[in-house]
Length: 108
Length: 121
Image (tube, rainbow over all chains, first blue to last red):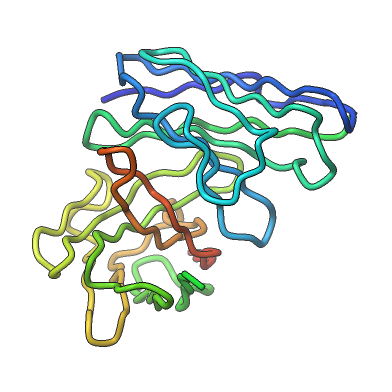
């Protein structure tokens, strides 16, 4: 089973700053990795799939990179609506398609 | 609008049972594999179960196998999760999730808002 690790657990940024979130898989998952955003009371939202492809309607300040075991989600110029918890999930090795434990992006 | 709406959560006794429902709208439900994912407070999401487009081939996470049953009614655009022999460790938010093919691979592209299940005496 693939273990997915996210770091940091919490990231404090000021609006307008760049946020860089990391995700590591315990085995090579190629580019089959997705990122989600979760806000309280809302459905989690797919941001990035295939490691770097933005989902429909996702602003271009969100970008994904990486392959193999190391992945990054970058939020350029963080907006107020971006303060949330972000999860990564690998989709290469089944079962299961494991999730990370999340990174909370909060206001500095 | 593509939407998934879960229902059926609440407060339940250990050893009890319940059935969660997920009503889909805005897309052809029968064209998609569907999943249940749960999230315990303070932890990352965990996959629970999935079911084929036609209701066949249900699959389960090891920790729920034999206690949970996933099913669907494509005529009603609804996904179900029957949960038996509840324990306090089943306390979580349960999400209904759609699996879709993107970039020649499979991803979870649509989620519901979730329904809270609390198991406590």
